[in-house]
Length: 415
Image (cartoon, rainbow, N blue to C red; front, side):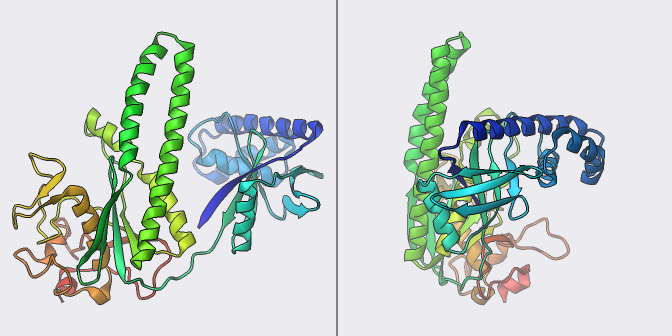
C-alpha cells in the first residue's frame, strides 16, 4: 500500500527560496524538452541513451534527479506546466531534526538544500504513520515549493471474516448489503444520497455561469472556477464520510467488503455518458482501499459481469431494470420485484461469497435449489473450461487465510 502526504515548508529564507524556485523552473523546462526528444524512441533505454549525456551537461542535476525526470517523461502523455521532482533516501535526500524537522534535498552535485517543515496537521499525520510502521524512502519537491512524502507499507495476511458486505456504486447513491454465509441478508442501507442532490443543483448553476462566460464575463469565469472547486471539495469530503460509515458497518458485522471491478464504459450516447462520468467510483475506490488498509479489513474486487442483471432470488439472468421503472428490477422467471441498487449490492456480496470454496454447496445460498440453478452465473462465451461470473479478479488489501484464487467450473459449483 502506498500513499502521499503534502508537507509545507516553514520559514525558508529568500535565498533558499530563490534557489529552489529556479531549480523547479529548470526541471519543468527540461521535462518539456525531454518530451520533444522522446519521439522515435521505441523503448525507454533508447530514450535514455539518446538524451542522457546532453541533458546532464545542460542541467547539471544529480543523476538521480535526472533519472526521475526521464521516468516521468516516459510515463507522461504530454508536456507539463508543473513537475514534482523526486529525491531518494539516503542517496539524494535525508531527514534530521534539531529544533524543528528538516529535509535535505540534493539538487546539484555537492549542493544540498535543507528546508524546514511546518508542524501542522499533515506533519502530525505523517509522523503518526511513521510510528505505526510506514516507511518513507522518497520525497518530492513541487512547483509551489512544498514537500511530498511518499510512504509505503507491506500488506499483511488477514484472517477470514464471517460475513460479506457488498457495495454497489451508482450515480445517485452507494447501496450496501451485508450477507451471511448461510445466505441471510443481515442489513441493507444507502449512503451518499445527498451527493447527487447537491451536484444536480451545482450543475444547473454551472450551466448558467457558463453562458455568461461565453459572453466574455470575467466575473462569471471566476465564479465558475470557484463553484467547480467547491463542488470538488464537497464530493471529496462526503465520499470520505461514506467510506468511514461503510468500514464502520463492516467492523460492526464482522464482514469483508466487496466492490465491482468496473472498467471504462464505451460511449453510448450523450445522456448516458454524462450520467456515468458523474459516478465518483475511482475516488471512492482509492479512499476505500486506504481506509480498509488502516482498519485491517479485507477488500475484495469481484467480476462486474451481470451484477445488475441476474436475480439474487433464483439466479436467472435477465435484462436488468424494469421497463416501466428504472429503479426496480423485475425477474421474469420467479416474478420477484426488488430495488435495483439493493439487488446489485446483494449480487456483489453473493459473488464474493461464492468464491470461498469452503462455503460453495447447493444448500448455502438462496439462489440455489430453485427453478434456475447456480450455473446460471456461468459466462455463456466460455468454451473449453467454463469460467463462472464470480471468478475472483484481485484483492486490493490482503489475502485472507484460506482464500483461494482458483477458477470455478460448473461441476465445482454444483458439487
